[in-house]
Image (cartoon, rainbow, N blue to C red):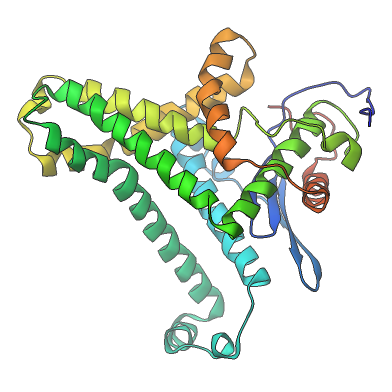
Length: 323
């Protein structure tokens, strides 16, 4: 069916989203909305946003904002993912019984504080696992090549290649899991809906369905930029003076430099998302290629979920969400 045009014109929006278990999270400039499809019906949760940079303007400065936004997105995304999982999971009688740990946490902290503690713990474990798998493990593996490649700069390049291979294998294995595959289908619904909105088209099933799955400002694109930037940063920083560092010292150096890598990657991704030229397209190409593994075609119900979630966060003042 032919797309219905609109007079609003094309633009780039700051609105972004995240795929959840059987649903979507959409974040606008002022509020966020979670829409989850459950066996008993659709659940909608809306929240006003209180951004860190509004309280501390310095957090909106270049290179600082990348680290702050990344941390904020991690916390927000973890909360939303856990919320969606609780709504869609099949609860058995054993699961319904409060565990000793849950009971102790509720007694000591209260249910709300206990929930925050669980989310914080899950976030720390998740970040620690990612750092171990994608940054420290490649560094340790690269030590195997030390006799063959004594030059630290070249060995860092090998480490970067190993890091990307581990990341791609991890993503590919994740797509083999049925539930994760469905999450990636909702990811496609998110992208298609935002594409439709940015083109100034009416948010209808007919207009959203033919939109492309890949989007240049996707979080997946950010991750692959992080991988590439880490190769350059770790290699350049280690020139000369780091040759004599042992593996433990270099491991600690990787951890210390992670905020620098995130900050640089965010600014690159932001610039590429705001421009449309040969350089920005070249910079966005690896991320869009990777999205073939993390973004799949959604069904109509998923698209309608995306439309609903996006509609809830569109600001009243037209154009106030322009990128």
